Image (tube, rainbow, N blue to C red; front, side, top):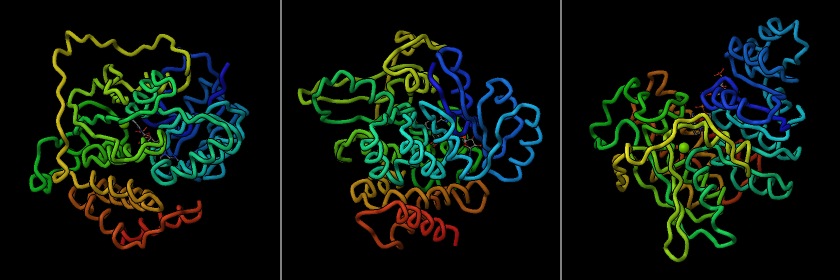
Length: 377
Ligand code: NDP
Ligand code: MG
């Protein structure tokens, strides 16, 4: 039986992970939340993990009272999150927290020899080089949960040692597909939060609307598959049925298809290399009838260019791009800046912070801090 720690178990990916547990042979050893302690209590009473963490200190105090009769250890803060990742006895850690707060626990889990089912893309965007190196050194697997990267991973299994010539990363285009840059200046928070195909946490939903999400995924794919960013093509695919594709030297292109449902990539990351029945609805190609593809509009979605540039430059650019974006999305969600200002503030931070071509972990944390400070100033 596989022992699983779920970081961010109360979020969109976290709850869907809990949802597929009955399909797989697994024991949950740790669960974490930031503040949603009612749901965490419910999950803890159902799954009986060894330890849980509420990142927020006050929430952790309340959770301790709630779980006093259970004998489950209740932790808090970054130490608690890291302990759940590295010291809970897990074989595999699902990293489903949102934001670069996932970086240190992911590194701790790798250091402790745990495989990673990686949903938390910000970790690879900030510190892809450090994370992938640590994983290689420790011989741990980084199994992608992000649907596009899972699709690439699934297609790449047909490679049999042949290199991938190209990755084709599909994007739904989000709620503002077809709008011009000028039209997007007046969109509201509610419009930006209404994703056409996927129901996700607020931060990634805004990232999908700006298309920064696809930019972050480009950087994620670059690190996961050791692929030059210029060989990663982004294609808009409104139906979200082709989850991504790979191309080989002979021109053959392989894709993975399915209805948009995260439970399949989550489950596959946890059962790999086995495939077991999954409760997602099945795709009927005849019902889907038509699949459409378009080139992205780089002018209307400047975040894509910012991410492409950061991917090409590497060094500290991923950490600056991500830190600035997290801060700017936070401001937008609080109603303090307009939609177009998200990418503008990220661009400003990338300009303002001097480029470092290679970074240690401390320098990644410093780049992240500096980027946030500039955006919030
Ligand atoms: P959610 O916002 O729904 O959930 C995030 C989880 O992390 C919650 O458990 C939340 O706790 C916890 N959390 C939030 N802030 C902190 C913090 N500062 N410290 C510790 N824990 C925290 O996010 P999603 O599930 O949508 O996304 C999670 C990750 O997966 C992101 O990196 C996202 O990009 C990626 N991803 C998500 C997809 C999706 O379909 N949702 C698809 C592909 C990738 P609380 O409940 O208290 O807020
Ligand atoms: Mg994705």
